[in-house]
Image (cartoon, rainbow, N blue to C red; front, top):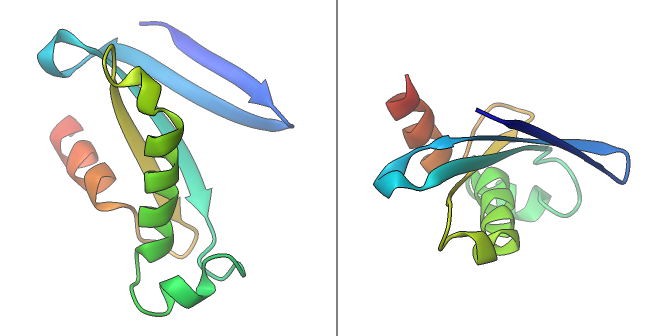
Length: 95
């Protein structure tokens, strides 16, 4: 199972690849966001996991071109605790 680590703009992104659903390799991208940041605070005030959901949505859009060959799973966690819903489901299934 290859582990890919790419360093971009002084931020490390780690992608772990293994076979997952429908025989497609799984690729995940983990990001941590702060719901108190100016770009998230208005949204986060209405929904406790809104910043994580927005970050996950941005990651999904970023990697949209990979979905025909790979199963992509965004994992977005807020610094105050909540994670995006699909990540919670994925991590529960993963065990």
